Length: 505
Image (cartoon, rainbow, N blue to C red):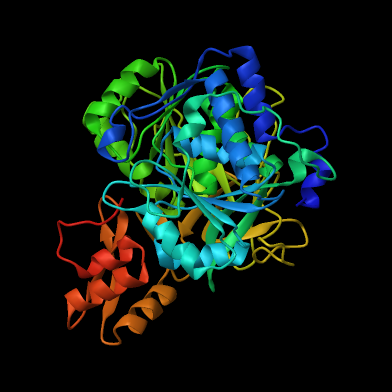
């Protein structure tokens, strides 16, 4: 499926598979992907380390497996995997097979999975046996039972439920065909590569992403870090969103170095990975930056730290960064776009430019991939090569799309005319961000009331998550059981259970 507007700039652009193959040709035997050393603590299997040759064979083997299942070109394949080698192999394998990847957030359960995948017509789900205490293979099976179009559920790991096709043998490197034949009209990079999921006023909003848009999103961060070719990356951010793809998969593909993955947070594993990284880039969510820095875990001045702000309205309250590595802030505006900015001498976040987003720290002639403006309603507008043009399946509008090509993010902002900058002041109306997930409060309240009309839920400030949900109900245990039966995100259901216990992956 081709995206019309993307075709205008995609005739000579590379696909993600092109970028991977280029890196593999340069250094076939170099490390491409490395698992967290503590992998066994949260999912099945020993840690994997793959060279580019081995990764290429696994990607081809995975792509061939999808074709053997009878899945056709442009089939949507959902992916819900932890931040391990498998997530990258599956993502690139779907693309090599000529299909569309739909990475799902890790805390989604049956309720969100069914709501999202029913909209995009997914035909298959790729998952694993366990992520921490969660059993995503069971969740995938329940989702497939609810959605008739999903004909295949495949999984990595041990003791998979009946009916789920095992995938661990794609790492046997038995020499699968490197070419998966399929035909598409028009420039390859203009086609839909992935579907990511935002939130609109009516619930989950699938967003179509071409290769051009994904590469532009990764380029925004890659250019601001100033990373050298072949430099390694350590990322703690899963690819279950546009920001995750743009900060984990794309900088790696653009640099051609090694991608080291870290899931959740384990101090010992993180210290070991940082020490082995050398002069590389470390990708972290904002909530982890301060405690990790204060614990003395970021000490290499030759590394660069990237902080992902999923709640960019909190940037103005950020503290000075007084640790050795330079820091790059990346503001994420849902599934619309990201803006990266390296901190200067003040060690405080740099304001978002009003107009073309550029930086003196980038190389001369470096492309600008995003542009900002303020709407008459006082909200932040974005346009540029990374900004999506369509929902999925394609619809007339994404979200308040302007005739000038801007897309409204919904984030309130004000203009600092002296600095020619925009200051983000508030999230989209009626939303709250909890631990990197954004929710519409009306939707949450309706969900709770459907389970127990007398229950209430509110969002409260939280030092680690930004905000958290707190709930009350006449019978908390009964409501909690009901929410779990419905497959509700544990960030919501945990509001009704005693503090100190958690079902979250």
